Structures are given as structure tokens and as C-alpha cells.
Length: 356
Image (tube, rainbow, N blue to C red; front, side, top):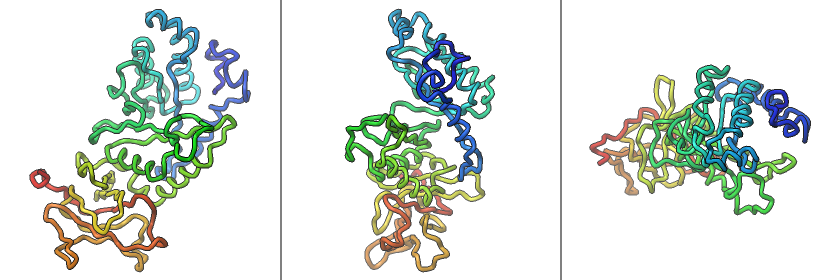
């Protein structure tokens, strides 16, 4: 996918300049991405690369495999030269490694490369990398953990992690035989996003283009709908962190993130099921609550309210938890679909003795 002719002799007649488009596709993409300014950070987008350590049917790899990986012909001839070339030539700032499950990291010389990447490369101060660098390395090291595909830990992680998944339930590439039921719904995608970020994770969402580079309209639709939801609720997603170990019961429909780097922390509660009232078991009290997408300047639009005491319809405030009454909204004024976010100021965490 890039012009590797001068740096990697093993790719002679097997690169985009010798066959196919005869254009440095990766290089052009790198320049285009780095010119884009993120609307959330006001900084240029970071550019990274997915790289497979091995090729299943490469003769050199099969020779090494046949010798129980006691030789490193394939690594020395292809894998390492490719990795060094990608970093040196394009200054990629995300190195996403894969193909780690057959050979140990010693065979891949992973320590050698990562040591150089983190201490001597031109991107040493900004680069991040994942954990797939040989047998037994997953969730053991790396700027972030990948674990297995669709990785979802059972608790909040102190180390950053990433859940990598694909829109098509059964394929990472384009599958012309896939029907509508093979694709995850927007609700399923957003729920995965919320669960991931509430545990200190990042979501990597894959789409599989067809041979001519086009993306299936159903995938485009999913991305557009997620983008629309994020345009309203991005405040609770970007530049936020998990709220410690505070999680609701497994059968709960609420997840949390919190703001960072501000004088007053904002707690965000993701409500995945619309009900008349929502009980937040992790919170004992709060000062103000607003729903993202509902402007306080628009007086006609109702905001959530805290249930302070017993009401005529039987709802009441437990002193150890916070109960919120969601506003009554018609379809024309509800801010979004699927999942709604409450921004909470002055939230006080429920004491551990009350939690028990």
C-alpha cells in the first residue's frame, strides 16, 4: 500500500508502485489525514497504521514456522523493515499490530522494535501502540490493551484499553452475501460505545470497503447516525474518563463518564432506557442536572428534575441514592434517539457503607 521499493527489496514487484494503482496510496492518505483539524481538540488528526506481523502463506514465514521459529528469515527480510519504514517515512503515531497468535515475541523481535519506537524514533514523544506483539503479550503491555476482538473487561480498567469491532457481525472485510440482519444496529453500536468509555476504553469501529473502495450504504447510514448522536452528546464522550470504580448493577441501564481538566467536574450519566424516573445508585446527591441537547435558554423545553421527597404518584428520594424524573417529551423535541445523557454538577458519590 506504499512506495517501499527503495527501502524494502523483498517487496519488489509487490507494492502499489509496481502493480495496482501505481500511486503511493498510503502516503497520500497520510498527508490528507494530517491536514484535517479535529473539531474536539483543534489539533491535526493523528495518523496510524494497522500492520500484520505475518503473512499466512509467505514462503519465508512458512520456512521459519517449519523450523519452530528458530530462524527469523521472514522477520528480518519483511516484517521489521516494513515497521521501521512506516514509522520513518510517514511518522505514524499509532502502530496497531496484529497477527500475534502463532509465534512468540522473541521471534518477531518485538522488544527491539518497540524500544526503538519509544526512545529513538521521530515520533517517540507522541506515538502509541497496542499489545499484539507475539504469543502471550495481549493485555500485558502497550500504550493500550486490545485483548481479543470486541474486548469488554468486567470492571473499570486502570490501563487504557480499546475494544475493536466491526459493523458486520461476521466479517472484517466486505462480504457481498451479508444481509441487513448481519449488521449491528445503531442502538447496539452506541451501547457498545458507552459501555467501553465508561470503563476507560476507546472504541475502534471497522468498516469493510468493497474492491473499488466504496462503502456499503448501510455502513454509511450507521456512521452518519452515530455521528448525529455524537454531535449532541460528544461532550460526554470526548476528553472524558471513567468515574472510578463506580458502576451500576449489571441489570442497570445507566453508565458514567466524567469530565477532566476543568475546575468543576461534570458527571455524565448515560441513560440507555427511557423511563419515567431514573435511579442513580452511585450518587447520593447533586446540585444541578441538565440533558445534553436540551438548551436551558429554550424555556419551552423541560429539563430533568431531582425527586426531592415523596410525591403523589409514589416516587420518592432515597437518602442514599439519587432519583431523577425525566421530562415528558414529544418526538419533535427529544434531543436524540437510543441513549440520552444527563450532565450532573455537584454529584456526591454514595458512601461505600451505604453501597453495601
